[in-house]
Image 1 (cartoon, rainbow, N blue to C red):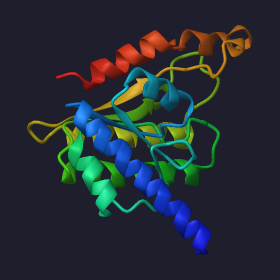
Image 2 (cartoon, helix red, strand yellow; image 1 turned 90 degrees about the horizontal axis):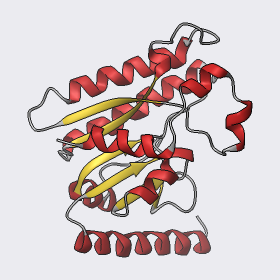
Image 3 (tube, helix red, strand yellow; image 1 turned 180 degrees about the horizontal axis):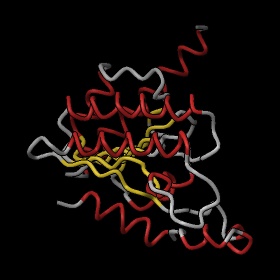
Length: 209
C-alpha cells in the first residue's frame, strides 16, 4: 500500500467515525443497510435518515466488500453494537448469474447473519424473491437463484428461533431502476412490480415488532 492509499483509507475511516458518532447522538435507533449504493439501497437510505450504509462502491458510509469484511475490527464492532436493525440487499438480483455467484451470496449472507447474532441485532431483513417459488407464467425455472433464496429464507427462520430476535427474508418485488423501464417490461414482471411506497412499507413492516 502506498502512502497516498494509506492516507486515503485513514481519511475514509475518520470520516466514517465522525458520521457514526453524529448518528449515535441524534438517533436512538441505528439501522445498517448493506448494499446501500444499489438500486434499492439508495431508496432506503433516503427513507431511513438514521441509516448507516455499507457497500463496496464509493459513496457508502463504510466502503467494504462482504467477500472479505472483518466483523471483528473496531469500526465494524462499534457500528454493529449500536445497531437495532440491519437490512441486507447485497446479493445478486440476476436470475441468470452463474451458480457460483448465487452460492457466494448465500455464504456471505450466512457470515453476515452470524455477525448479527454475535452483536445481538434485534431485527434483520434478508433479501429473498418470488423466484424462491416461481408463479405460473413466469418465463423459466429459478435454478440456482431460487435455491439461494430458499437457503436465505432458512437462515432467517433459524435466526428468529432465539427469543428477542427476528429475521424476515422478504420476497422483494421488481423495483424498476427507471420509470421508462415499466412500459416495455413483460406483463409478468409488471405484475410483480413494487413502487417506492410499497417497498418502504414492506421494509418497515418487516422491521416492526
